[in-house]
Image 1 (cartoon, rainbow, N blue to C red):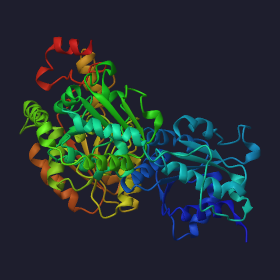
Image 2 (image 1 turned 90 degrees about the vertical axis):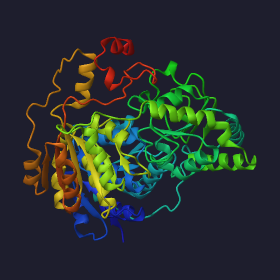
Image 3 (image 1 turned 135 degrees about the horizontal axis):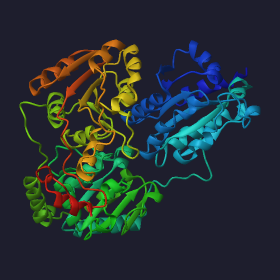
Image 4 (image 1 turned 45 degrees about the horizontal axis):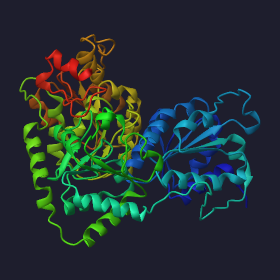
Length: 577
């Protein structure tokens, strides 16, 4: 018996072991939603905005390691997904977005709710499809999941015209997929791997730079084994946090614009950088010409276009980082027992000195709430056992600095695109992937309002997501830059009409708490965790607080600004120049 395109679509998702979809209905996808009405195996999470749907699918994917799926209608429904798709693309997240489309005969005629979403998303998808024949639907869905989850992961969009989902065809599922023009390389070049092992053996001041690719490939155990065996300290990109235990003695935390002093100094003074699944973006390198001036660079990445794109590389290795690291470790062990501790002794001692010289710190206060204090308390109370999502800005950087991530897939944050409004729907996706885990979104009062409508989604589905709002009545990072580099001209960064977040939470059926002094922070966090409901925690924090260290735009990463120097204009001017 032939099936409709809508029925074929549902069967395809089941074949891909999808059980959760995030979406929003509309005219041209109603036949799909009609099939979903009777289906007991697929659960559609009705978000309150299509951007929220894609961010939730993204959060689901990051937390679980499985592809996230979103389903939306045509026209504005489809265009509302673009930010979420671009966000997933920048951070290499496997998300498959299905958009409805007007019937094929009307495409290009400016029909009601028509938009060329294939053309619009071409720059920000790994690949996209316009299905023109219902007989091609199952093959295209199979190819989409294959493309999204293999090689360097990324988002794929499938545009579904109404006549395709209403048409009839036999359901034929291709068990194996082979795309002639798409063949990701997983095994690294043996000669390059041997060269890399040799360089690691003789380096006196090596450092591992661990990126998001380590987490995506599941290579975190191999990074830890390499670091411990060869006694190499590890720094992480924002996307790489959790890929190496943040509490480990060899951990240097995050590097870059708001990285630790000791991570940045180690990079600048190293003689070898082993970059693993990182793309050397501008927030990591600072001034490229001044980046790691004394170091040879080994760059391991599954995406050949990422290697040598931003920095010079001495030993490029294209391949899956987990497999490549296994080969490097094997070669190092075959060399026999080497006194790594003795070889690296002076280097590790110098790094310890840098750690003591400038640890991450902030001004303690009994009167006003410091945002760093809130994050430290969340870490202390949870003992690090939580999935943390963030919005973007100061809240994101303080989280990266003061929460120690020991496990992969426990920090979900918008790294490449820097999307305000990402954290809350991502937390919803993560909570649906792991109903029994504690999920906390650390937000700013500006960014939480970007997708605050998803409170309804969280409450309706009884999701115990916690949201910690660092409420400083400003677009905090914008204000910080305006204070440091624009003569304190706070142009449109003051959110002078702020909502009462407690009342907003209660209006949606959630729970709201507010803290206005430090002594209230810990009890509120503990109470919020105990309550099995969605909770907003409104922390009224010091509005003047800034994120330090800070590398000004255009500066080398060892040219950092510090809190005690913020009132020295000559320091600012030198750094900016």
